Length: 98
Image 1 (cartoon, one colour):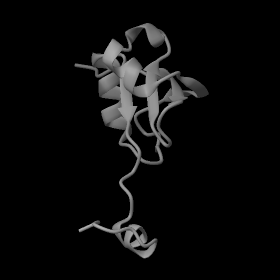
Image 2 (tube, helix red, strand yellow):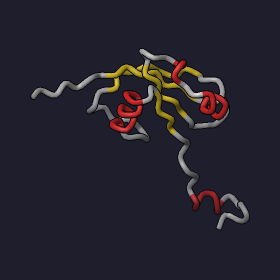
Image 3 (tube, one colour):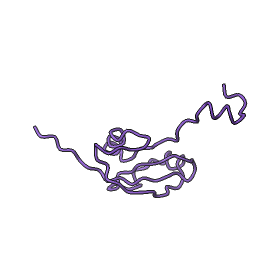
């Protein structure tokens, strides 16, 4: 049995509401696959880039296999902003962090 590896072309959008939140969309399906709840959370999608999402590709903060699986199953993947660094949070004088 031969395994065929499908290459996906995805569009990446940044959120107009939340810094460092990104949405990966299967380019073939377009933004129509976004559920209404996601639209209200994400805001207006601002296009960043289109790219070929090969299995061996490295992404900065997410596992390419998880992104590919989500794109194949639901047509989109939401990359949440990173959690704040607790040491920096405390150093900035924030109260009640613990």
